[in-house]
Length: 137
Image 1 (cartoon, rainbow, N blue to C red):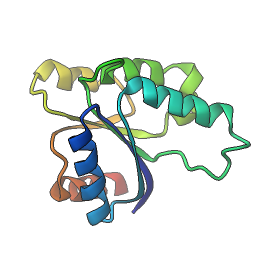
Image 2 (cartoon, rainbow, N blue to C red; image 1 turned 90 degrees about the vertical axis):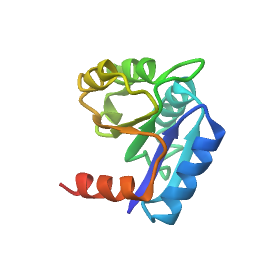
Image 3 (cartoon, helix red, strand yellow; image 1 turned 30 degrees about the vertical axis):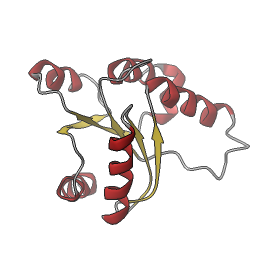
Image 4 (cartoon, rainbow, N blue to C red; image 1 turned 180 degrees about the vertical axis):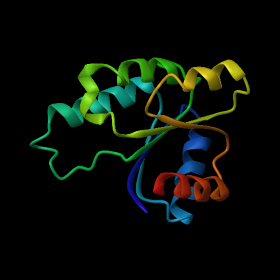
């Protein structure tokens, strides 16, 4: 079981489903939900800038990331997140969880070292079992 997961998606129903499925599958102790890439960037900036104050706050071990969101989408988030400013978070694995079926998106995801998989929505217990096996390797 992971300690903490971050779900980034603009759809409140998807976020609620993520939290429920993750909780029922005992996949993570804590799931944080954010509505877009900008909220996520601000979340990580706050973690980084307040290290002493946030010493007891865990950094997520896994991010479920949607691609198509207002304000800042998944690709923009990944472009920011791979900058030196966020280097201390580069060990966090990212799963793109998207409804897109564009093969170009799948190929593009492979250019980001932290992206370990590209899976279709919605999240499911079977998907979490698959990811558990993948993360243990």
